[in-house]
Image (cartoon, rainbow, N blue to C red; front, side, top):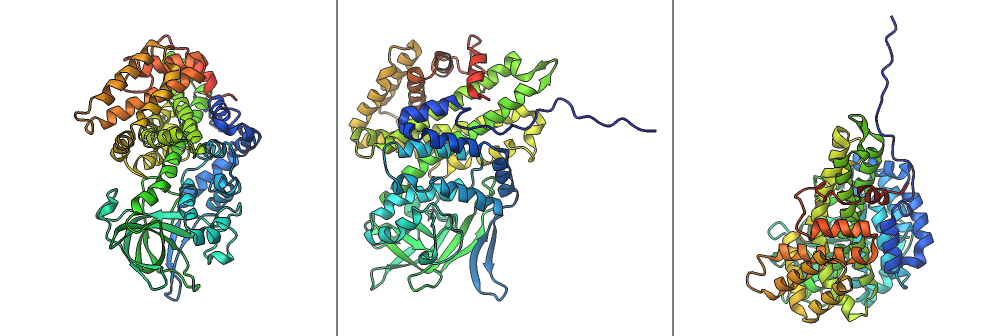
Amino acid sequence: MTWPTHTVLNQSPPLPDYNLFAADPALREAALREGAKGAEALLLGTGAVLGTQQMQELGRLANQHPPVLRAFDSKGFRRDQIEFHPAWHSLMQGIVARGFHSGPWAQPGPGVHAARAAGYLMQAQVEAGSLCPTTMTYGAVPAIARHAALAAEWLPVIGSRDYDSRDLPLAQKRGALIGMGMTEKQGGSDVRANTTRAERQPDGSYRLTGHKWFFSAPQCDAHLVLAQVQAGLSCFFVPRWQPDGSKNPVLVQRLKDKLGNKSNASSEVEFQAAYGVLLGEEGRGVPTILEMGTYTRLDCVLGSTGMMRQALSAALHHARHRAAFGQVLAEQPLMRNVLADMALETEAAIVLALRMARAFDAQDDEGETLLRRLLTPAAKYWVCKRGPELAAEAMEVMGGNGYVEEGVHARIYREMPVNSIWEGSGNIMCLDVLRALAKSPRTLQVLQAELAPALGRHPAYDGHVAALQRQFAETAGLEARARRLTQQLVLALQASLLLQHAPDFVAEAFVQSRLAGDWGDSFGTLPGNCDFAAIQARALVL
C-alpha cells in the first residue's frame, strides 16, 4: 500500500530578498531629514545588499559556529589567537568596506554620522555580534586622534576600507580594528576600583600588569585600557604587537560563554608587563575613555533599534501569510493591535536614533553638544530596555516557530540584553542623565527648545511636557526617581519627533498610548480607535 505523502501547509514562506532602506519609510524619512540626503543612493544600495537571504545565512552561520581560542600552538608556545568561522570574516569584510567602523572620521563631511547611523541600523538587522569591534573602532578614533604620534601611525590604517584579519604588526596590515578593556572582577561598572597598574618607563611608554574581566574582541589590533598610576586611573593604548616586533604580553585566559552575542569573542585577559601608550593625561582615564563611550552608546541604541526592526519585519511577514481560525493573522483585530504597537515602538526608536546621530554631526554646536550628552544615555536606557520586550512579543507572534534556533527570533531575543548592560547598565545611564542636567543649566534650555516645536499639536503631549518640567523642578529624591524621569524624557522626545514628522495616524496612536495615560503593560494594548491597518502597512513596504 502507498501511503499519502505528508504535505506542509499554512507555513509562512521565507522572507524574500528586499531592500531594508526602501521598505522602511520611517528609516528613509529620518535619515534624509537628519542630514543623510547626500547618501541616499548609497543607503539604497546598502539596503539592497543587506536585505538578502544570503546575508541572513551569514548571520546564522557566524552564530552557529562561535569563535574558538587558540591559546597555544602544538609546541606549547603562546598564540593567543581567536579563530572565527568564514561567515564572520565575510560579515566584517562588508562592514569595513562600507566604512561603518571609521567612515565619518576618514571621510568627514556633512551628515556623515547620520548616514553611518542609517547604514549601521540596517547592518544590525543582519547580525549583531560583528558590530562589537565595529563600534569600538568607531568610538576609539577621537581618543587616538589626540595623540599625534599614534594618530599618524594608526589612523590611516584604521581608516582603510580593507578588512585584514591577520594577527600581524601594524606595518604589515592593510586595515586595523580597535577594542577596549575597562572592567575588572572586583569593580564592574565601578572602574575606579580597578587594580591593574601601569608603570612609566624611561622612554615614556608604560608597562601594564593586572587583568580585565571583560576584554572585548581580543582579536583586535589594539585596545583602549584603563589602569592605575600614582595620579589615578588613566587610559592607555595597548597594541597586540610591541614596537620591537614581538607579541605584546596580553594573555587571553578564556572566552566568555555568553547568553547571546555568540559570534563575537569576549574574553578574560592578563597583562604581564604589557606595553602601552598613555592617552590623555595621567589620572584622566575616565573622561578620556568616556568620549569613546559616547559613540559606543549611540551604537547601542542603533543596534537595539536595528534588531527591533528585524524582529518586527519577520513577525509582520509571518502574520501576513499565516492563517488561524479561518483568518490571516495580520487581519485579526487583536493581532493587528499587537503588530501596530510594535511598529510604533520601532518607528519611535528609529526617529530618536537618527536625531541623535544628527547631534553627532554638529560637533561644534554648543546646543547640539549639550543635547548629545543628555540624549545619548537617556536613549540608551529606554530603547535598550524596550528591545527585549519587543523581541519577546515578536517571538510570540511566530508561535513555536519563533522559539526554535532555526529562525532568527531566538537569536535576537538572546542578543537584546547586551546593549542594556554594555557601556553602562540602566542605573548608570539614568545617573548620567542627571549629571548632564546638573553640569550645565543650558542643558535644560536646549531640551525645552527641542520639545517646543511640537507644543500645541496634542493636549496629551502638552500635559506630558508640563509634567516633565515639574519633575525637573522637584529636586527631592531625584536620584531615586531617575529611571522614571529618564523614561518620561525619552517618551517626550519621541513624541515630539513623531508629531512633527510622522503621519498623523502614527503620531496620534503613539501619543494616545504612551502619554495619555491609556498605556497597558504589554504590546497590543493600543486604544481601539487607532488606524491599525495604516500603521501596519507603513511598517514594512514590500
